[in-house]
Length: 201
Image (tube, rainbow, N blue to C red; front, top):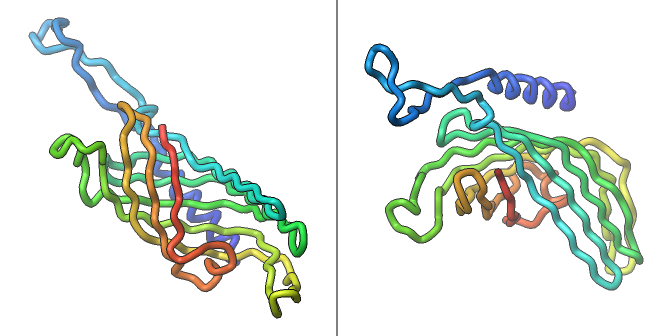
């Protein structure tokens, strides 16, 4: 089943969240061997949180998206993680539905620490991929005034593209993510390309 495959993938990914320690110097403090004293930091510096929130309201339309995430910096360039996803879509004339499920993602910085060389605020350019498993009640138009809804099912949606990350401090940053759907099911929800804003800290 697609659901069990996705859960197994998340469990494998969570296996990467093992304890990792790093050492940092305390200047001026020396051990009996004449070396700087070390302070052990846990993997907290490698775990990050973030996600995106979407809100859109018009006269006959409402859209809400909540997509928090937790991630892990497997290496300074390779980040991965996942989290739940919820969307609410309402067209007062035609359609009202909730969409929910889980997603995971991976990104690899092809160019990193760009701002250190250029001072333009851009931190990195990354390849980005995302896999979503969502419960969707699809909506179809027969004509501009005729429509019908399909049976609610789980859809496996794969998206890939790139991201531009702009650091706002030591940990905080925001990203512009541009994605293209690699499965037909992506057309149920997303434009092609799909542009998102995401925050991480």
